[in-house]
Image (cartoon, rainbow over all chains, first blue to last red; front, side):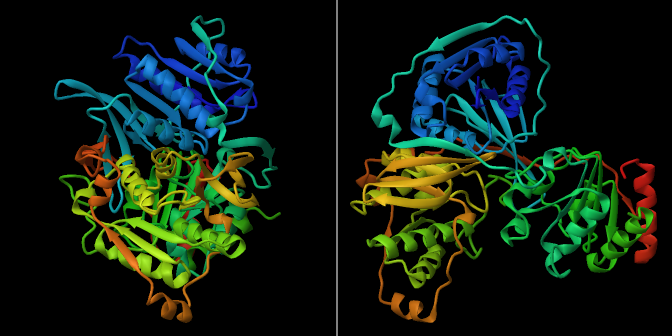
Length: 328
Length: 247
């Protein structure tokens, strides 16, 4: 089962991405995938989910649920999960999904794994288990997590990690409309208004070229070189979690397991050793270039082109040559 | 990392205060300055975590509480949330529980919502601004990808803050002197009994998720190293990028 997130009467792409993944996993469970929608006027979205391959949609409709309401949404989703008893629940790891999923998992006393980069079902002992792959901390390792006893097995997946499927217009499925039982006590924290903000900066999602910097820039006199190289290439700048912690980049430009997953045609990584929780955020890029001073850094095992050396000496020369190539 | 269990070996590693939590403390201190009350800092962790509490006292917190017991080891977010909730319940009355939106290590961000559930409180995560209306109500601006939600809350509440909510202050010499007299309470597993938690609900046993194994990621790329002096490197690199047709 998946939870399909709607905002302003539109489905989020990440929900279609986890729907496709759920369809792949469902081969073992009679191929049936259910989706839960919470909001108001869910009808058109329920049909869209069916066309993307959901065999059943539960649409919980209430005008009070137009905006995300943390307690009420958790109550509604937990109730549906208790009734339907799915083996697996996938939730898109948006700022809303990351709030809802743990609240629901706590209500069901079940396990939840955040930011999964791979999911598959494997028989362990005498039971089919959902193997949840996440990057490990403190080394070049991946961890397999399972939830052996409790059901459902719940996970969140960041946007862009899975691929969405094809829409098949006219596809038929079952759609059930539910009227959730909610009282005033379910709205102790009440979202009263959504304020849209102009995204002043270009999003990394559409960038064809991304230049990303890590903590190694500290000794190279700051993050300026990364932005300058991105400018010279006509691309966008980004960074690692340490770069975010240093305040060099906003959170929206943080690459990695708990940040953005990107797939540009060219990805430059500068001054980052290449821990897996960082590299999982860009490993599907077409061409990866890595520059770092440590020849043994793991970043070189996932790059197409590698340069070992002093960032401060090498990058300015690259910038200068690029500018000369393209005088404007 | 322990390759057998896949868990992080924490012994001997210096414990530091999670960055988002420093912003949570700062927000608590500001609320106290504005509205009065007192600030208690609570953590679950190994004995070394006492240092983080001392630092928080030196920054201006009134009281520290350390939840520390070998039976807490191996906790996932659900089991951690239960123990933290038990610890908070010993405080007898708490209007706002502030925490960082996520930790720097796991960065799952799952804890605040689960903690709120076990405390029976509502929660707001991704908070970037907290505004007081009166003693029983606050308004929070809660970040989303495309803007923010304005959320009105009746107290008590759990609020998880983003780093951008404020700039945090550092401990001062005077603060360190003043903090020397303040107490850090320590609770072991008795705190769980007090809250009616059974052994099956805490630590590794109370954690629904388990590590099934650890493996090295498979690398699909073969790297071509470019060397020479900076001029050479830049020339070769740009030629390669043209060959790959990416610039």
